[in-house]
Amino acid sequence: MTVPDAPVEALRDRRRRETSIEICAAALDLFEAKGVHGTTVDEIAARAGVSPRTFFRLAGTKEDAVFIDDGRFADALAGVADVGDDIRALLSALREVFARELELLDADAQARERYLRVRRLIAHEPSLLGAAVRREVTSADRFVPELAKRIGLVELDVRTALGIAGLEMRTTLDEWARLHDQGQTRTLVDLHRDVQSRLTRAAGA
Image 1 (cartoon, rainbow, N blue to C red):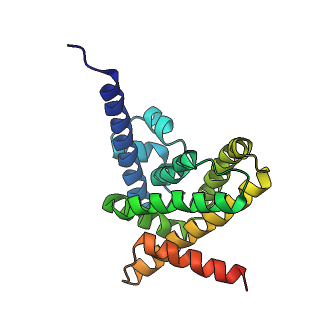
Image 2: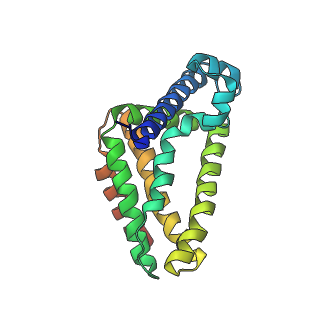
């Protein structure tokens, strides 16, 4: 009896994910102890138990190593439904995609903890803030032209809708981290709805 290829590939993907998480954890530990500038790639790789070559293949730069969970939002953009040439429908679809990913993040205790640690580091590590902005721009540059062509909207409309949805998501994550540090608990999903409502009211003022 032959074994299907799919489970083998799934196992490889899972192992890559596990190794990436180990690299992320090592980078977070070292950044918190020594700062980003005081930490080297070799130190992160050694702490994670991987070679520098494996580090660069999976993480890229030392700053990018801590953003493993951001990939879930970028990857989710590929699942945005074809809504036709209606910017309001596109914004609604983007909000649904981000809301679904926030719900999954809510259910993943380990990913939530990583996110909190990253948000705290970003507050006083300019290089991490720069990496976060760069990653967001790169993701948008890859996603916007393809979606605009597929649904028949001009790229500015797509960038505008993505900008609004992205602002809502970032504001949700930042407020969630701030409240958590104050000992207050809110689910990401509920807070996301609250942020959308407040930004809508602000835009209509």
